[in-house]
Amino acid sequence: MTTSAIAVSGLRKAYRDKVVLDGVDLEVPEGTVFALLGPNGAGKTTTVNILTTLVRADAGTVRVAGHDIATQARAVRAAIGVTGQFAAVDELLTGRENLQLMVDLSRLPGRDGKRVVADLLERFDLATAADKPASTYSGGMRRKLDLAMTLVGDPRVIFLDEPTTGLDPRSRRTMWSTIRELVADGVTIFLTTQYLEEADRLANRVAVLDQGRLVAEGTPDELKRQIPGTHVRLRFATVAELDAAARVLDGATRDDEALALRVSGDGGTTSLRTLLDRLDEYSISAEECSVQTPDLDDVFLALTGRTPEVTAR
Image (spheres, rainbow, N blue to C red):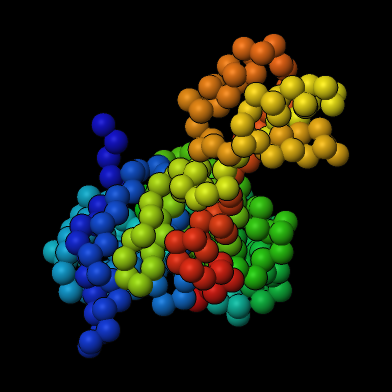
């Protein structure tokens, strides 16, 4: 039985007469990445602030790492780590000193603390720059140091608020690798991001929040299959095979230059099997078969009526 790292039911929050969260339900299994998407003002930041005990909810129940946030806030804080949109490192301190500061705040014993600092510097490939001021670090190095600081205390649930904003592509891929390694170690990641590709690559499940309500939730592939435009692309070796397939597949769209057919469908295995059986019935063989689906940008636009570019905070 899968244990929930985060369980939310009926979450509500309003500021005066403005309802920010209107009955949000979600569940995040342990050792997974959960991505929360939504346009600016949808309630993402408020959700994270409530789950991390920074803001009190008006109604609903929330359990994080098995603890109720209303009655066991201290236990919740001891079990989580939070990395904000902007790296929270002290640039006057070295990388080692930043980590040591977090160790001191966590009240780890001296010998254990030094071991934790050394291990994190090594893990995040910061050992050679450990004794240089953080002001000399690149953006990617600051984000790695920030995440390393979050891991002091060994949190089992980590909230990442747009962790790769402003990073170059190489640094972003490095951060993705780090996130995958954390999840492989059993850590649960709650991610908000303005990069839909990031959610697509990292998240086990994605939820779309709009005007305080969850309008969709599922795996990235499940969400993409909900949007019209999914189709099977068949490419053939000869014009004769293309002509034969076009005759038996009603409604298919031809691409004569590519010797290909586009056949609408849901992308599921049942419909794909039916399509291939139809070709086999007439002894027609496709050289290449692929399922083409909308991406998360298409999903986001269809669900919220807005473009992904406005998902930044």
